[in-house]
Image 1 (cartoon, rainbow, N blue to C red):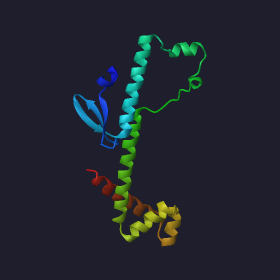
Image 2: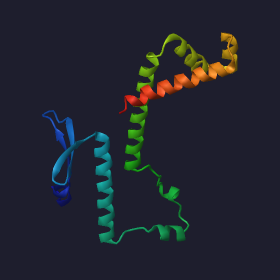
Image 3: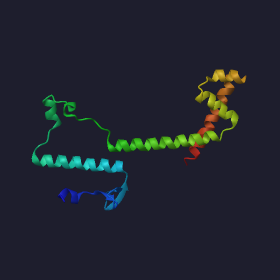
Image 4: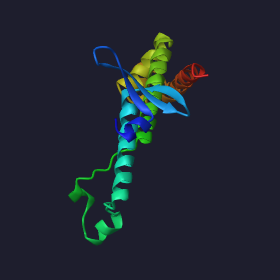
Length: 164
């Protein structure tokens, strides 16, 4: 086994069939099980770091300044910008938060009475203007707007009270 393999702080756990059952990264002398996605990002970053270190030691590093002086673009080298692993994780957490809020909204909508649900359905799902909806009900526009604001406030309270 190469020296770098002995020194690395990540590994895959495999079963008797050779299938990967867990991905482990050692952090502060503690083994932490991570997802395959995080494992790949971590191992790729470590691999890039090792590659750069080996090339520096061999004196084979291209500097960005030298490439710019020689009018070589990054696209000529097939270098693409990628979002960082941290940004990927932030996006995943944000998506999970959005899904939780969507679930809470759906749950809160089921708690509305028939008149409230009809109002929300008409104004937001069917996109009927408040003025037209008021005419259909035979009430003033201000009445529909007041009811809408009251229902939205109620939904907001139900969504965020479950968050506490």
